[in-house]
Image (cartoon, rainbow, N blue to C red; front, side, top):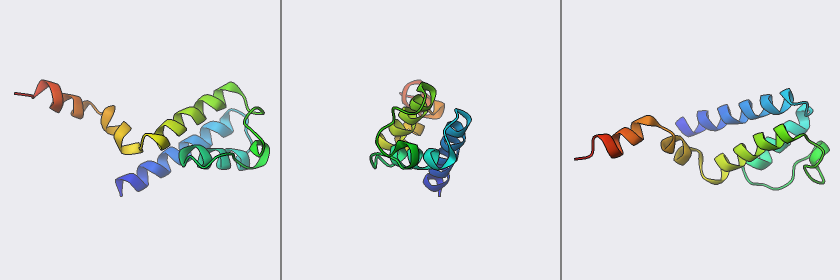
Length: 92
């Protein structure tokens, strides 16, 4: 359930972020799906390539691609303070 909710939270935050940068909703949906799942090119404006979107939207897609490629839970654990506390502070 954690993976499910984390995936959809990232999915919806990514779509809202892309829409806020000026990308239309259909292209934002397909871009997030393609970058989060590593599926290739998107649909709509992005059917050929990603040159039609602005740099901020590209950075959002880069972050989504990193989450998709390196697995969501691995990055969540890596950025979790509890993990670092258990590894280095409480280590005996």
